[in-house]
Amino acid sequence: GESVGLHLPTLSVQEGDNSIINCAYSNSASDYFIWYKQESGKGPQFIIDIRSNMDKRQGQRVTVLLNKTVKHLSLQIAATQPGDSAVYFCAENYNTDKLIFGTGTRLQVFP
Amino acid sequence: ETGVTQTPRHLVMGMTNKKSLKCEQHLGHNAMYWYKQSAKKPLELMFVYNFKEQTENNSVPSRFSPECPNSSHLFLHLHTLQPEDSALYLCASSQTGGTMNTEAFFGQGTRLTVV
Image (cartoon, rainbow over all chains, first blue to last red; front, side, top):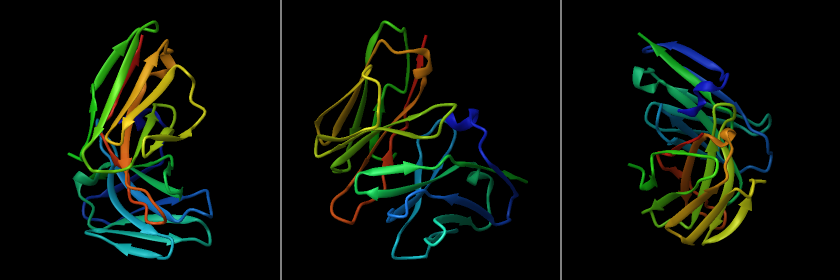
């Protein structure tokens, strides 16, 4: 993807380990949060979302945690696989038609 | 396949050319978006349309002109672009309304190179 030129934070994990990707969001009024995955040459793909009335939500191999007190969001990936290698973006929504993205984190999975 | 289709996938244009990017969504969503993703910046929101009405213009130069003829189609008309406009242009759609907004679905993007 285009993020390859950015000096993105990079997380390197061994296959099978758990990954934790963090994100700080900017607006305390944001009430909806989404994690996206972007592989090279593709558009961002939805992974999981969470609304502000929750602090944890689980999907298949992924968990999102929301800490509104410190405006922090995290994505946990269990048993990370090579196919999880990508750039991960968090996004926040504080007006129903405006989705703002963070800078992204590159996840590298090595055998 | 996300239900959002962008054409063309790649475009090379000169600074004096006029071209258009097209986006079509088959998801029945009411909101559509243009984002710019460059090598130097993360995803930047450019324009938002909700029920065909523009609700956001994020200080985008006038050489980018959006058009939304209906809720399923979105265009980005380009004219007299600069080399720094070279980027991946992403279209997205979502369903908005009240407090129950949903995630945005993205197309594959148009990789634009201005020469």
